[in-house]
Length: 150
Image (cartoon, rainbow, N blue to C red; front, side):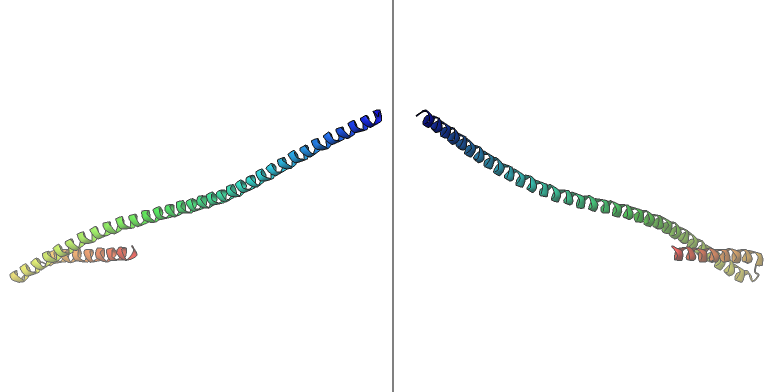
C-alpha cells in the first residue's frame, strides 16, 4: 500500500509538473507571439522612418538646388543691372552729344548764313566749327561703337 501511495504521489507530482510545463509553454508561446507582433511593429516603424528620411533627403537636395538657382539668378540680375546702368549712361551721353551736334550744326548754319550775307567768310571761325563738328562726329562714332558692344 505504501508503494502504491508513493507511486500515486509521484504521478501527481509528474502531473503537476506537466501542468506547470504546459502553463509555462503557453506563457512562452504568448510571449513569443507578443514579441513577433512587437518586431512587426518595429519593422513597420523602421520602414516608415526610412521613407521619411528619404523624403527629407530629397527635400534637402531640392532646397540646395533652389539655393544654387537663386544665387545664379541674383548674379545674373546684378550683371543685367550693371548693363542697364551702363546703357543708361551711354544713352545720356548720346543724347548730350546729339544736342551738341544740333547746337553746333545750328551755329554753323548761322555762321554760313551770316557769311553769305556779308559775302566775306571768316575762314578761321568756320575752321573752328568744322573741327568741333569733326570731333563730335568722332565722339558719335565712338558712342555708336560702345552701344553696339553693350
